Length: 124
Length: 124
DNA sequence: ATAAAAATAGGAATTATTACTACTTTTATT
DNA sequence: AATAAAAGTAGTAATAATTCCTATTTTTAT
Image 1 (cartoon, chains in turn green, purple, brown, yellow):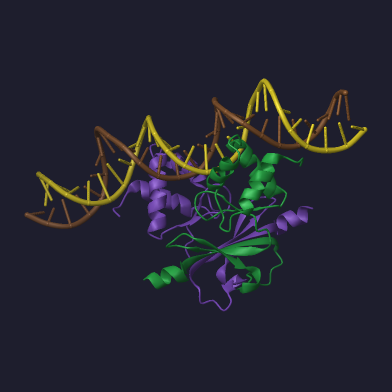
Image 2: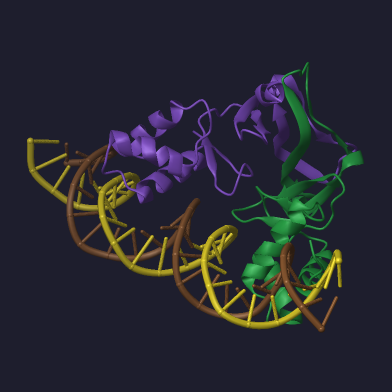
């Protein structure tokens, strides 16, 4: 992967997020910094960054892919009321494993908890 | 929800699968049984069946939604070589939980394990 | 300095999904 | 059984997310 100014902007912009934007949300911010960066470039670079392990792609949040610059192993909680996505750190959960498993070589596990966050609970 | 012949065909067709088809894959089979069932009808009914809890929607497998007639709580393992989706039964895993959690009310958790299945491991 | 490899902008194309509309089927009530 | 309201349908148009394409530009290794 060669250096590219555009890819640098995309990565830096993603790093400014504490939540996990979709490509479209990211595009708006990136576009503010450089009006010429096209969606083709954005998608191509996001995919390259995912493939090289520099960022993570999160599916299953809604119908679109979201992107996460936090590459250390962690999981997500989505509040079904406010749709906010919270990070759940590895050390804060009991990791699932398959019992007596000699059939599957597990390389990664994605976990998405869904429910109600404290804030929404207190509003009721 | 009223009875509809088309919905019955869609549900029965989904039940014939042991794997978890996308809407498109399901459409091909449904279309073999009744040439007149439209994609609009398929999507509308799939969404109704999901909303009523009769089937489950699985996101995060690839870019499209997949559907599962197996509504009892279970999880999935995707082989990154052959892309086959295996069911992992609840009783076969150690369920993840958030430790010392008083912030999130967890209603459901989706887990997708990724790795290499036995078959693909043995081919190497 | 230069040539091959990689990347780009911008728009076209593709794919998945939803929305719309005039018509048909189902269901509850008589 | 007749009937009217509610629910559902086919077929197509529209939308949204993402990928593909191409001529041009940038990066990198010599």
